[in-house]
Length: 436
Length: 140
Image (cartoon, rainbow over all chains, first blue to last red; front, side, top):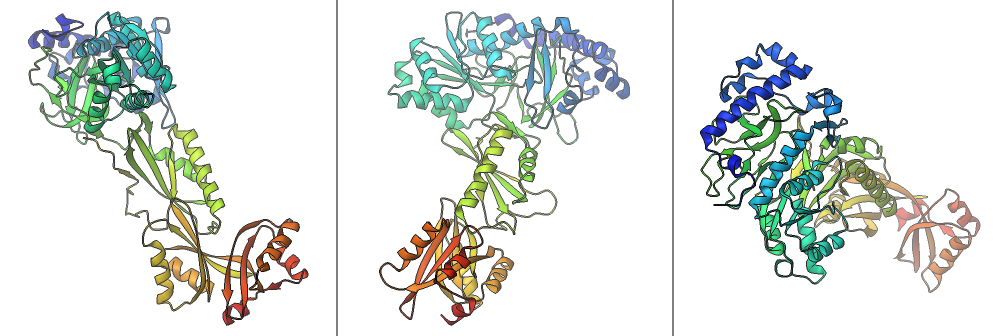
């Protein structure tokens, strides 16, 4: 027997689980229809009613919702609860102009804590464990999501948030932290900082588990983190629109992340046709919340590309898994855990008359961190004879990008025609980061 | 003022060679070439015949090339020649962006200066310095 947080749920026989999912789905669809105008309108237009859900497969009759719907409904248009029942609000970064706000009832937060706590059990944690949360706290769901998970488990929670890496190392050591939760790149930075400070965290520190997510991480990097810290690595999936970290988490057996299927119903669709794909095929992940009270999401298109793994897992959990993400269906870039759209970069460039409109973004991985190089050309009439002037232009553009994107961008001025001109949709992004 | 050919180059293998080859193919002779380089780019400042023609030729060939007005001063090729010129600039509060020099056949040197402000050439002339004219360049 493994170490479970909610064994009766996590190891529930599949037919029982599916029966429970159907009951929850009926409730969730009805709840959304009755309380959110958008769903009522969409369902009516599509000629479907909550009563048409008589099996899990019937979900394919329902229309999708997308991130834009949430932007349009900003801030509270998709809330199914009156304000007095909303316990907390989280928001995603307003990368394309408008932030999206998600509300949580008290019960939603409790469920979320449970989801994350299951991951804590997956890395061997218990009420006796100390968990250090080095995700950023705030509107971002990482910090508080992991925090609530730690509290649900009954752990000692150290809310270090991100930053001040030497102090992170000090806390890891002095407090005997068992489990670290943060982004993979930050985990590696913490490990490297500890090593620089003269420690061997794998040997000297008590830490035995890590729960890392919110940005892509290559297999090599993952191994490096696990080795340097001497831990079991748990990959966590989540998105603020649905909940936050804990939608799916990876057990010791690996081979995918167990979806919290009592709380979420997952489908894989063909992103072009919207058709549901047979189990095991790669496509876009679509999630329906089964229990969420404040912000129910019905068939939310995540844009994340993965597949469902339904093989029996040796850990004893019966919940199916999603495979490691292959990427995004749209062009959003995730750089050091921050969402960046090429359109944002374009917007910054337009503010610089000295810079030509062609540009190219090259993403690489330098050590543990994503590196972004922006290649630009100067306009023909911009004076090029003085190094100082060119360097100054570079510096100003870099500062502006940092301010807008919250990500460091290395600007490189290149010769004309270095940047490929293509017909139609230009190839603006070259992603050389290792994804597998 | 005379015209300097300026070429922006990425600091990568073969880029300077390509630019210079393009000039060679057009049979444009260079008197001097100076490269200011940084980690990822360089600026080639070239003293050559027909700089306007060279710049448009390079631009057509896909280079970022331009003609930059600079001041060229002819001084005796002897110790202290350049020092006198720069001391004058310093005392006259003329800020030099960049400078380079090359010796020419008749025992003199040409100092090329990029100076902030417009009236520097006038000041140098008034002080008796020999300012090189475009005609002289062609005769070098």
